[in-house]
Amino acid sequence: MNQLIIDLEITTDVTGPLATLAEFLAADQKPSAVLIDSDEDIESIKEFAATLSVIALNFPSFLDGRAYSSANLLRREYGYKGELRAVGDIRIDQLEQMARCGFNAFQLADGQNIEQGLERLQGFSFSYQPAFNREPLFRARAS
Image 1: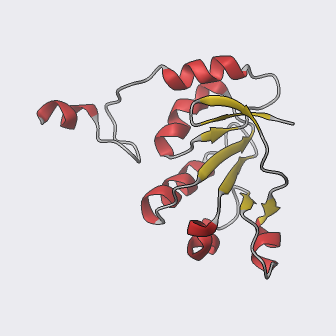
Image 2: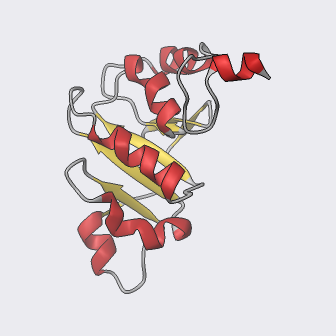
């Protein structure tokens, strides 16, 4: 079983297998958890987003940031409220930016220290740029 950080807690993955996007779209009875690769169209699940408990977005490489945009769309445009999991080549240096885009669950790459990852996520309380769920610091100071 894989360890994850979910909602700022280290836990064990109990979700079970994630359906690929192709499996999800082909299924008559839609699974509650889906894995979407960075080259797949996030809009294909727009009408199903509210019914999903877990959406996992794959980062096939540290250098591939397309899933950041998908996470932002899921939270801001589609109103997704469930677990949004970052999987693949996830490094602790990316976690704060991932959280700002809407990820609330992280499956770190092999060799990454999960305790250090949790510390990194808890280390930022303010930011100058807006995030999916908060205004930038300068707007907070103005009120």
